Image (cartoon, rainbow, N blue to C red; front, side, top):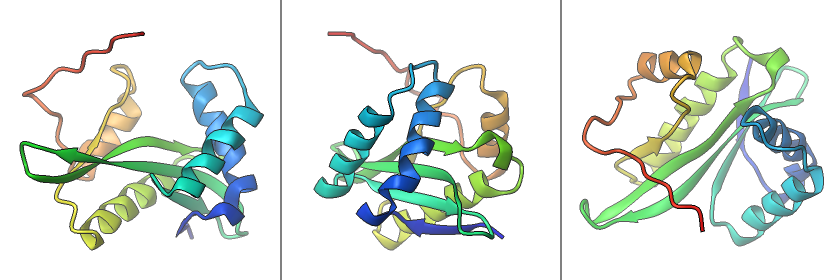
Length: 148
């Protein structure tokens, strides 16, 4: 059974390998100390909601990170589910779905009317899961990036 908890600074050691694994999934170099520094800052500032997935033995197997963003068009806040990762050996056991559902429940509890996420164009596995859980692809907006 998968358990989802809100992460605190006490979970930093559990989060670091997950964040580093997430970065490597997206073809970034391993940077354990950078991941530690980044997550320590998020937890200290409280500028993100971090969810941690634990297996039956209480081992951290996945995480999700949500960032609040004001929305002028809706005159409210929406959250960007910026990061979602499950360790490769723990996939297909429901952790990703449990994290997505916990994110939805957390947003509802905070009266956040909308969650957003992005994934790589070729990530068919993730896209299928998102669709199965009711997420809908945005047909109205394209994403543009500018490297500075």
